Structure formats: structure tokens, C-alpha cells
Image (cartoon, rainbow, N blue to C red; front, side, top):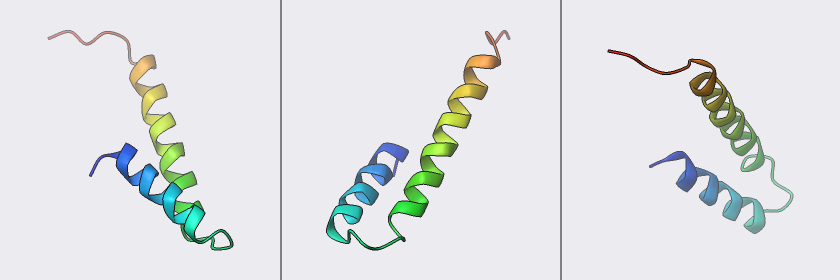
Length: 49
């Protein structure tokens, strides 16, 4: 399962269980990981073989 699908499913669970913390915490953590990976990818510069 890709990150987009995980985020979508967690978003759905957050709507189904509005008072629950368990769908929000992993969603926040996963978004942070995705943004960090994107920042690292863009700061690495071009890849040469």
C-alpha cells in the first residue's frame, strides 16, 4: 500500500471516529515522513551514474 492510500484510509477513519486519536497520530507522522523524504529528495540534487 502506498502512502497516499494509507493517508486516505486514515482520513476516512478520522471522520468515522472523530474523537479518536489513533487515526490522527499516524496520519500526522506519515505526513511528516513524506515531507521529509521530499525535502531530502530535492536537496540531494541530480543523480549521476
